Length: 198
Image 1 (cartoon, one colour):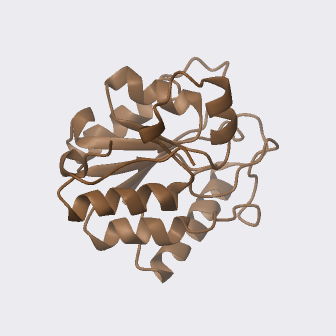
Image 2: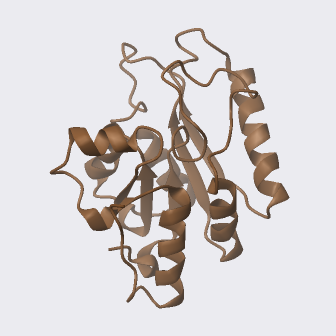
């Protein structure tokens, strides 16, 4: 069950939650394509005054598929698309490292979530994290942060691979469905919020 009264910050994974994902990586601003309804969903959160942050693994940088300048172009496109709808991302944490780099930020480690918490001066229980992968869940679980799985991106695959991990009331079709339920609970004080496994 979503408890909006406790959530002061919504944290999102990027690829597969905000934009379409690819097993070949998103390597350019042209390849960065918003998922249907996701810009409007983020704008709806902004409209009620909730800050939104992003925590995203970007190992394509370490792998040499693109550089940080290209990543900035992707994020400039994202910011522009959101601004057109009255929404915004308030903070972006990204990990440029590969799986062999032994960093502390790459999910499933919670380094980026800790970075975001420090930036906003919040505790894990003050936030919720929405992702599409098991490593997203692991990063949130390491801190005791509420987590919600979306079936967009790799989410459907994640649900099939870990059917006993995710309760149906913590699973949503996509970001738009999560935000709709979240805001319904927000307006009702959290008493009528519920999830759906589709």
